[in-house]
Length: 157
Image: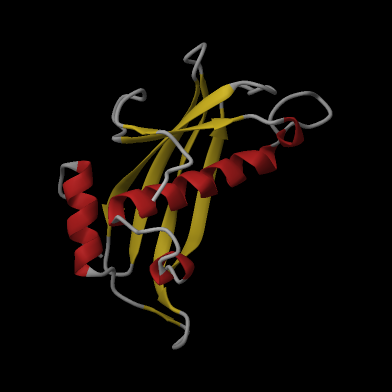
């Protein structure tokens, strides 16, 4: 599988997973800075790439097309604007795991200036689309997330 994103394991302290995303012209608003909607798009890309990387999903895998989780919540704190042609590092990590949900933290940092552009967190819920109900986070996922993050992530309900 060819990775279209450069994944590195340093660059943002506390994050083992970091990808680089350029701010393109279509990502900026009339004021010339990264539009708030684009932050969410960049984070969605980071979340999916993190999952592909940690779960070692191969290109065109059915698992990639049928990921059994839903984004339940996401919070962004905008710190400083990003601008056209800047390269952003997006660090993402799994922060906790409960019975049928897991959380993530993220930071966006401008590569050149090292300024913090945005930070926040979110929650995924593991979900059976056919049965229309939550399901437990698979044990394999827990093991992979904990191995990748290098720490225990399980939390009580």
